[in-house]
Amino acid sequence: MDTDRFHVCATCVNFLAVKKENRMFYFCDRLGYETKPNYKFNCWTPKEHVKNLMRKRMEEDFDEESS
Image (cartoon, rainbow, N blue to C red; front, top):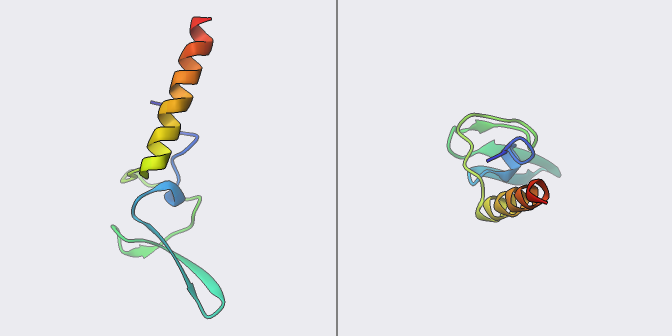
């Protein structure tokens, strides 16, 4: 499955966004440290809606190749 289009911290189940003092902070709940939405780590576990979107895109790509 092609994850390159989706694999970023913001799409991971462990990604947390917290607003403090009029500023946003982003954390990885699993690793326990601050991150950024566009960072990538090998421990990535996509959220369910991202998995569904990845499946849909994979099916669309397969249909295009089969045509």
